[in-house]
Image 1 (cartoon, one colour):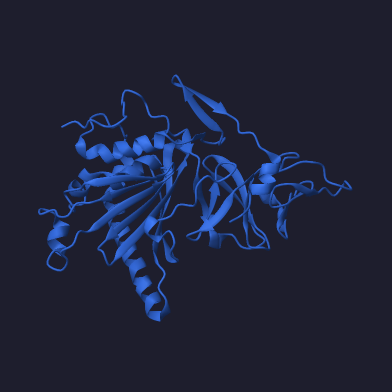
Image 2: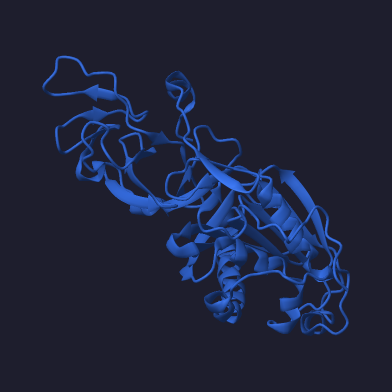
Length: 367
């Protein structure tokens, strides 16, 4: 039976979902924290935009646009001095807010500023907010929002599909039975945490013909928990397990050229104290890797060849449609420029963002 989906018109092409030229304003992972030492500056390209990232003596990561506002030299050729960055070409120096604080040939610097971006660190990664001022927190698992945690990196990968397509795979109820031979009955419950975050929780109590249920029912009678929390359409938090043992897996994705995906898996668990707590967490993180590899291995061939087009949705596809609707209500930016995209009467208009110098000086701080 075809689904009577809420607020969906598939005669109209989505302006954000699965679009290689647009992405949602939000937090995106940049680099592993361990790969950026104090006093080091590196070039990075994120969502089509060239940036530089450096770490000052205060151990805070700072992200600039890549090119010096004086004459366009690449700032990654420069060097870190204290908490500031000096351009190699003419030795102009910029502080962590991007303001020029020294020009060697002048007694006082002129009023010029390098473009900076809000930066924070979590889960062993440096993240960048792709707008002027963060509107939401860094992605988090609702269950662990107020908890300390341990984490470990898993697989880093590139797929031949858009990050949004990779994300909907985790709420595609049909494929859990056809591809993975696991739960054959799903009933996802949707909840929007905020403008940029949405959760889907499976409330199925039992599934008699499921291989997984047949395997664990002799030992465990209660429902198995399976939930997803999506941030900005490209970072997904998967929680699976029993009421006493949860596995948390984060898929941090970002859009790269050609509408493809660069992704990273991160395994997270609640921090436990003492030597036995640390050993237990190591085991949990190792088992999480095993769970993630099982699913990725089976799905990888799909991600290499899929040309996503939901032409004939059925009832089981309703969570996917809800996810698409959630994305379509968010702020779209242009891949490469990071300027605001607006769609009116089917026409996309790119709007360059304007800076407020005093707002940046007061509000842009490293978390």
